Length: 454
Image (cartoon, rainbow, N blue to C red):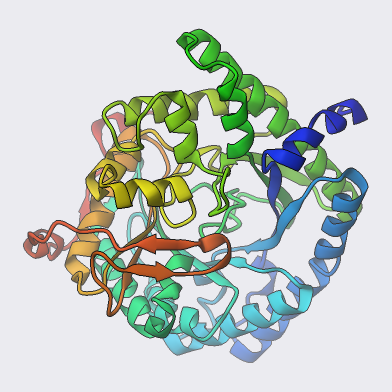
């Protein structure tokens, strides 16, 4: 049980250390909406979402007022649309019609994002999967709230390199389709390896087919809280450092558990998981980079950065697991460049490069996230970066992801502006040597030897 003492204990964290519940995400299964008639399918989808989620935003606001806990976002995740639209959608343009319906439904219920415009193609692609993937640039250009993801690999299946090649082209096309907004569409498109079924965080959220008809997943974030706690153990040994992170993560996760339980009860929807991810924002004092620097780095990217991040990620998970019976999603530390002022400063200082960020993804909770690159970067180079990141996830049996933004018309030294939680980002240089011959090979990279467990 969670008591009011625990809630009052977090008041200081909320008031001065940027603690918040980053999102209540209502997962909604659309499998029962499947229909071979596109018009009827869209009607069912709109009706299912607007009925199931009609009270989501108001319940979130009520919980905020009652407990004094900021809930920044109320969002929806849905069954991957490639599965839902397969019977009705014969062309990419058909899928775009579903995207427009989803956008209208999200606007009607008042959420800022709806995730699940997705395809799961870690081994191969159906025609429906391919049509959805090819529709992504247009879908993200004509909607405001849609978030899209493609899972192109897993430890069990290997990496679908045909999908990786296609996704490089799609990222570039999405950048072109939204170039009037600094290629903003790419900020709502994630390429995954080992994507979790219960992730509440955008842009990669979708409701996996193993989930219930509806479920409440909550994402909590508190980089500022961890930073403040670590200031009190400066100069201490690793044991005290680790204990401090773990205890702080425990307290933060308990807040998420409270909100999740209340939302579940009031909406009459089962509780799924709490995702404790240190997800930064552009606000000062809400940075994962600053935590790593508090641990002892002069600047993020310096030697020791990967080790410090590994320590942080592990202790966050250990503290979170003790605070809730159902910790899931991506729980750990996010390292998005555009959403973290400390990361942005490190890029400007020259200490943080794309290659160092890739090394850090071996131990963080996701991957190469919200990284702006020159708009002239080729589709094959983008595919190569995706392939590298997918390989890290596949071999290490972890979730990895890529959210690259090739900003059309801009180059290294310039800045892209995305606004809100998405922040802004300096354009980072990319290795200009090509990989087109490698990316052009057809088929898939086999699963690693240690995947054969049964």
